[in-house]
Length: 261
Length: 261
DNA sequence: CGCAAGTTTGACGCTGCTCAATCACTGTGG
DNA sequence: CCACAGTGATTGAGCAGCGTCAAACTTGCG
Image (cartoon, rainbow over the protein chains, first blue to last red):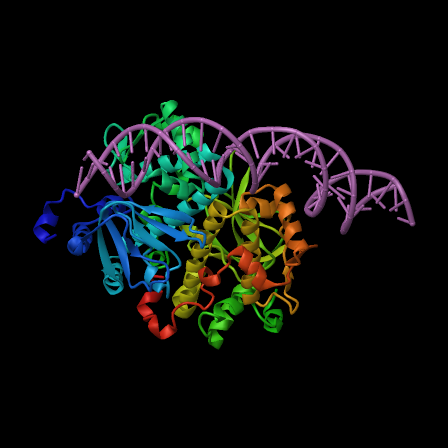
């Protein structure tokens, strides 16, 4: 992918995402676009990094989906996050001596591997980008807490439906939901099961209920949410935890905060 | 609590904790001890901060236990972290406009409320403290992921036992486990239930098994782990996620890393 | 066409939940 | 010193939500 192609790209998902938190100036947008110059295609099923590896780079998803997961000795797997276009895996990932989880690809994907040094340079040069990225990290943490709440306290239907709501909201934030509330959804029922701590059989039965109730349409790698409000209601979904309105207005964030976010 | 008293205190749990990550110089130790000058007693059952509140300070636990939790409309509660002496709630907590969870006290506790400005000054002045604190934050995130794994994938016995192992390891790190492997454990079975996503009845039955098998002794606010290795084995507990050996050796951490951790 | 991956269905049963009662311990006031 | 209340632990009986196992079906693809 060369610079000419980049320039043509209507928008970069990272710019879409961070643009909601801070208004990015031209040079900042250029810097983000520039990150994509080393984008590479990876195929579905491969790991970007695996448990036990020593991390030295940060990954940025430009196209496709990745997910964070952990295996248990008995072969079971817990999925702990989905990364969609515009998402970075933890920007401090290279501080671990050893990964305690893996990051795999759910679909074919375009990913940028950003060496630690380059990432640090970017953060140093563009404090507003740094601020936005670190804010995004805080939101990721919130999301993890919400997942724990779902898995720990809710019944089967209420485990699946908030996930649909969340992913819809997040995909919207990067302009990847079309006018009919449909978006790419590469999870198989196996992934839904490993995310919610259920079996695929039971996931299947729950999806049938949601479909029968006319709330969603799912299949062929796409999800359509037919009645978001009704789904959100049975899901007990409240998007506060996504802090979608972004961090405090910039003025409130004295610049010294940024490096501590 | 005045400075004279502070000086007498044999050790401060925060110093114990951070001292495992970086070797603290005298002035750094003093700065940490100095934080405790405004310590206040709080009584069990009160919240340090509640969902919806606008945070403006960071809390440091000196004595007693706190916990992070979230309520659901139906009254159920998910506990998402325990904070023991030496733990700080998220040092970036004041960046949220609104808390999306609460922090409550499990026991009477001595807590320092550190205003954002003071916290930021400390981090600015002592980069090594900053580095250690931000490292601790990374570990907290790892822990949350491990909890999700436990709650999502494991059976009842395997949900409770790793929690015992984890808390033992963490209490040891701040010198709060005595020679007979006994430590303060103020959780009731209700809290164990709300942590693991089980009912108190079933928690009770599992504890009986662990007791009958001679693995633990629990009650009266104390927990004794009689055979750590055996318990860890049935728990599937692997302390890697606690990254107890701390961050990469300091040399490896170029100083510029610190402000981005 | 044939295989692989993913989805769906059915029968059955276990793990962990519900409801409700009882017990144990501690602190309090008379 | 005892009655009493409150909190937490324990027990039992019954049951349901979700898991297990296994087979069939559907879809996409080389």
